[in-house]
Length: 430
Image (cartoon, rainbow, N blue to C red):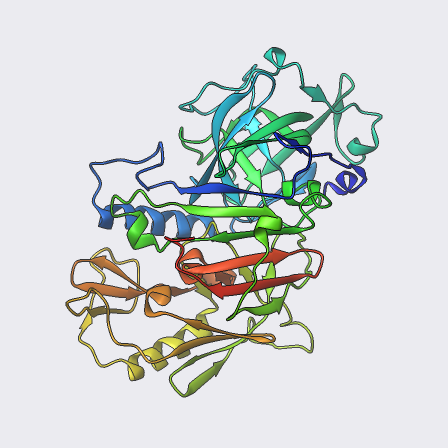
């Protein structure tokens, strides 16, 4: 991994002399505010696209590790975009905001092999603040070098890839306060060979994972190790709404007030992912114990589910899913229906409000009982039919807490205290 970045200290500047915190828009890629928005698609069609991306992202097949950097979640088109500007003078672009990736990168000229993008490809020769990382620099330990320039290569789980020069540059963010936040010396990948499942809406990825290369850790001292986000329910985003989700950094990311619950972040073999420990799920007065493997060893299940903003659905092991599905079926008095798109297993006829009556649902994490709403685990796939959005993980048995389950919570990551906090929040008003 890019452990060398732990030696690198960044200074933050903005329009004010000090930077205490800032808030940015998180634009869902199918929402009205996204450049990827297709007005000809119905909300149901947009939802199916999100499901398709989710199933693709959760696939762990074909994982490779080449020249220091590994990622197992596929980037795909991503679920949320951030608008940023790179360089001096600044060039505007959209990047995928990804809590499942560490390295931030963008396509760069000259392009040996690049995918098409809507915005101009960044040309480092036109920026006065661009610098490559040299081979003899501490920051290049363990990476390949060429002509005194540090090179990087990332191959994602679906064999999408990016290769280029490890560099530093000034990034600018359009804060929701109206002031631009300028961050110099961000270490990022200037990609000259990029391809795979990326679409023209994005130029690359901004890595929000837990590894040293992540922009969150590059800004660790300045943002005090804190970021948070509030995700608007997907059905509102896909129904031609101007509402948008938000992500906060530093003091703006503090989660406070009544109703907060917190659970530890567990360190695992991959520092990129934020692992929580799910002990069980209860529906009504029935509780199912959660195990991430058939063979449970002491301590093995501590940190058994990844919380990920870029995955739509929630994935659990197949055996646990079968027990959960059975419990849900016994707890709900509604007419069973088939998913017309044949993606989801458990569906029901909805009531006139587009939902169904479900007993109290609680996800039991270490030190935190998270009460979920019906919309956190059921969504309307077409008019009159709702389906369970917790699904079996398949052969990989991966467990992921997806963004549908995270909607309408202010979710704060405190990387100094190693905890994630949840506060029930109407994210349309946040």
